[in-house]
Length: 257
Image (tube, rainbow, N blue to C red):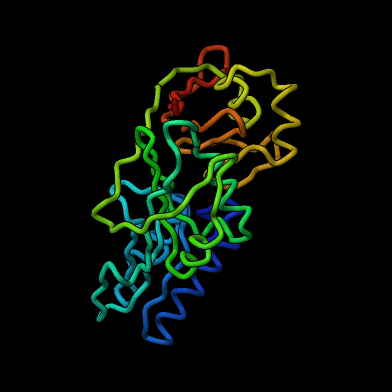
């Protein structure tokens, strides 16, 4: 039995990286800080490292309930502090009375700066106020080069962790009956689109499962999976209740508003 059989094939490269981080901590006897990890990656790190007495792990994304977090792997003698996670926080200052700035626009602007997504944490939005959480090593570069989002001129104002707002997220539960657990079938039912429309969309790299692009319409979904379809938002498979008498699957999903 190997560790890999507990995970999907597309996760094996990340597992190799986690094993390498763990080995670095053991051989160098010093902490190892990662980039921002999505929740699925955090679960993998926790499952591989979290129960090892010699190497321990903590996560921080700055904000309460943060989705994206940096992991700190460290030897058992070490006492981590907030500073170890090297997070920098900003208010996005823009003319909110005259323009609306949305999450996809902000992320698109950040990605256009040429840095990996893993250098950016959560984007917090609440009633027109917008905050960014960044890896400290790239914060000065972003502060200097992020000058507009869409048509809105913006500046970044440094804040402390105590200034962070609570981002608003709302999910609506819905029960569905689907013919199979294929990705194209599940997405077409959640977003009320035809499979003929969803399939090429998936093949073009516009769908993600657990924050990873999946371009196979036949990919089989599992309970707990986070799904997203570009332009249609995010959803989560909360429960797979089983099959009906007609051999269809009953599932409960949460759809992000």
